[in-house]
Figure 1 (spheres, helix red, strand yellow):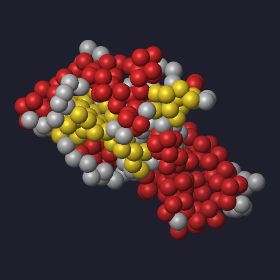
Figure 2 (spheres, rainbow, N blue to C red):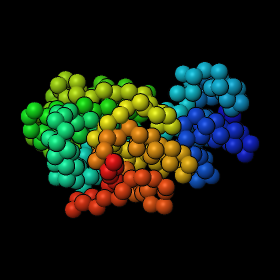
Figure 3 (cartoon, rainbow, N blue to C red):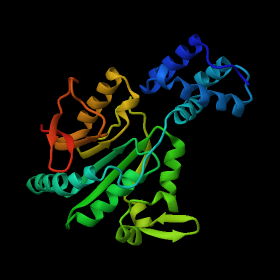
Length: 271
C-alpha cells in the first residue's frame, strides 16, 4: 500500500484536478482525494501515485474516471421541497406567461450536476403534472460522473431511495420491481442525460430554468464565476437559476438578480 500523498504530490494532483474541472481540494478535504487515489492504485495495481498521475495525463478516459471518483454525489427525490414549491407556484407560471407572449410552447430546463438522476426525474414529474396543453418540456441532465449518469439512465432506484416521492407520483411514474422501483419509459424519454464538465460552455441556449444545486461548493470563486457566466450565456431572458440553499452569489460580480419568493430564494436573468 502506498503511503499517504506527500505535500508535493497533493499539490500536483490538486492542480491537475482544478485545471481540468475547476474542482478545488483543500486541507479540509485532502483525505477524500487521498482515499480515492489509494483505491485507484489498488485497482490499477500501481505502487506510486506519480505512476497513476502519468497514466491520467496520457489517457483522457482515465481522467474522466478520476474526476468521477473524487466527486461526491448526495441527492434524493424532491430534495429541498421549498425549491420545488417555488418552481410550481412561481417559476413555471412566470415562464408560461413569457411563453404566451412569445408564442413558444417548449420549456427548456437544465439539471446541471444531476448525480444519479433524482433531481431531473423530480422536475419531469412536476412538469408532466402541471403544464397545460399545448406546452411541453425538454430536460437536459448532465454530470461529471459517468457512473452516476449510468445509474440515472437506467432509472432503477432501490426501495430506500424513493422516500419523499408522493404516493400518487410513485404509482403513476414508477413500476414496482424486485428490490425497488423502475422509472416508466415515458418519463425516461423526457430527459436527455449527457456528460458535461461545468468548466466548459455546454452549448445550450435559451434555457428557461437551470438547476445547479450543491455543486458550486466544490469550486473556488474564480471557477464559480466562470460556471455562473456559462449559465448566463445559456439562459433565455426572464429565466431562473437555482443553486443550493447553502450556496450564494452574494459578493460575486454576476448579472443575476437575487429573487425572494414566498417559498424559496433563487436568481433571475432579466434580459
